[in-house]
Length: 284
Image (cartoon, rainbow, N blue to C red):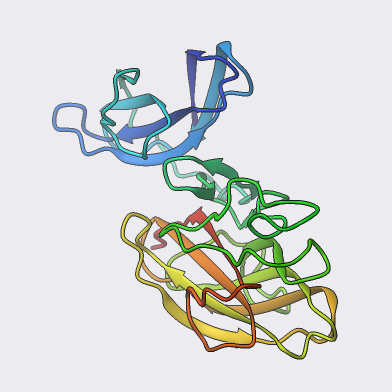
């Protein structure tokens, strides 16, 4: 393992700045592999750190792209963006590690370029925490950074927080609904479970959650997984499991609707649509 430490100067509170970390196993002809994105905890001088596994290669490089807003890119355009590389030599080593590191749980951060929360590092789960709490401009508590969708699908504008429908949290974790396989990293072509914490109106009998996934964050095409109905009214956890497709950066969508038809963007007055992006290991 190796750790990249980037000393940066962040503008203002730092919350609009992003540091994208990349590596290349061949410094002479680099192909940049994405590692993760970090947000400075505050403005001014900050140290941002990213750990990763060194690939084979005697002369390698890392890149840090430090950007103001914008989208993830190894060479992001922008008047205030900075990109720097560092080249270093790597010993060949004599043996492989005896065991792989245990994957960890990750908390999502809001990415202003994507418009949704994302877990930018590999792990066995990704948790939106409170970033998706409520729906749009609901009376009482409004949703932060609404609508939190990759394609700007808008939330319904009617109703009151925790009286009417809302999605409050999404977690994606490895393995099955019963927890089998949850100690492994989220990996392409393996199982994963989506857990949506929702608030259902009345008895919940008229509410439905449509689950989708995509492996293209820049131009999402939503693949339908299943529809789940709440067991009752109020706060409920709805779960589905599915096979993770190929692709390093993926996302899920939960479309929580009052009546209506199955759709990734149903658009009803009380409907909530939220996305969560995460990083997936390619596997073997």
